[in-house]
Length: 318
Ligand code: PBG
Image (tube, helix red, strand yellow):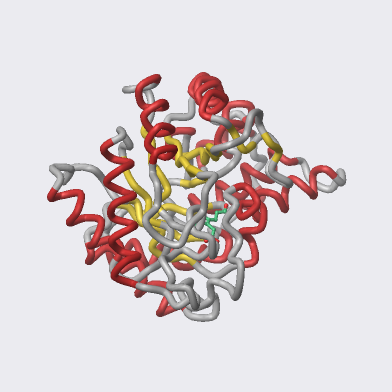
């Protein structure tokens, strides 16, 4: 009779037998840098993740580096919103400030989307009637990515889900001599109810309708896998599924079909859900967080974007 289940398991034995492990190197910490605020603002549900000024972002990054975090995903939230012809001055200043202060200590990915920039709160350029304009959208996204990279971003991360955005960005970056700069695409991104805290943080809630016509339907597995395959074909270097929890079954097939590294984004609602349980005394937050990360790793995630990256050290990850 096989009796492995009944062995007396010490922690050392459990560690020796564990099939998956990871370190803080595999975690990416999001940052929200916001124009027009004079001090940090709390984001409901996201604990020690706040809306920050450029100055406080630099302080936060410094302390995150001390905690071992090396990968960051920056969201820049400008004050003025418009329909098109976006002004990237603040975005450029924020990225430049971080990279000038920490030139070699970190990898700075910058989220490239339009929903924090548009008056509509949608991830695209629209006309006055709200009709999306794809060509202009792709042009705006490519310009934005070029602006981030020129300001020093190590990689760009399109989260908009407009058709053709990865190839549009790739060619603009290549033409500007940035062919080695990686694109980490939100390649399988569902229309989800779990983005609530984020939309407060990024000031990006849609002003009408929802994102269901450009984000994926959770019911559709083949669409979800196909979306990542298309991003790979368009030249994405890293792929990502989101929300992590609703995509756990897709990581392995996407990896198999594309041979690219696939990560999972533990989104704001997933993280805040655990934070709220903990607040009610119903969950040991650190244990819950670690458990969820282990499951992403077990499912094959090569990296995890999580609001808890800066707590990894405290939790015991090295
Ligand atoms: C922007 C974007 C969103 C998230 C990341 N980039 C929100 C959305 O698509 O509505 C969500 C991240 C989170 O909830 O933590 N398009």
